[in-house]
Length: 277
Image (cartoon, rainbow, N blue to C red):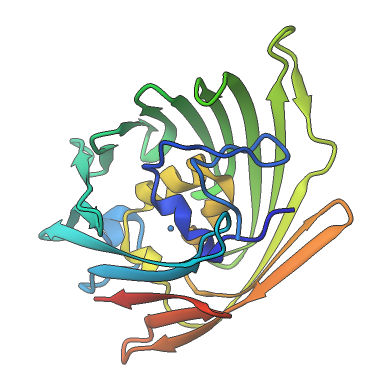
């Protein structure tokens, strides 16, 4: 099993042009497994805004520690864009329902569809590389399942299937179960991995910075990599445990907080994320 990507943070950065394949056919745009706030976006009702994130994380391919930053821009209460340290800007468009209708940059675009007030489908197109289609199921206004079809043409044609279901305790995702498979290129049959991925989460009692972002954005992340659905939780991870077959691994996290009980720094081992508001 691949190492858990710290906080699954790479799922926020969906601009890679070099997808890598996991052992179960899980293509996460080069990401290994190792995130407008306020009530309209499904977050905590607050005037606080997440303005910047700085990451210090290990590259799983090289083993080197890399530093990156992401700066978020708003128009009033609405998140309208974020810029990474390379200068790449990702923009957000909103529909008449006040919710995100499109997320896009120079390399890719994600288009949202709704049934009532809930996101029902997100289609992400990465120019010349892939199409990713995610459908969402809700129960009592909470995300219960994400099914994603990932169709890649680069580095070689492949069609993969991902399905994640979620269990909650209060407002936190405490368990997720992910099933994965690959479509046979000759017969078109879906061939499932015999080993499901079980993830359990424990939390602190403080406020999650990701709840300051629009809920639709978190759902986009959950579609790209279904484990990202845990970012819908109201509190911060203290421990994540992934079990698959006979393999199991865990990561623990510590946090520094500001006077409003939001984390200013989250740390696991030598890796960390800093948050500015």
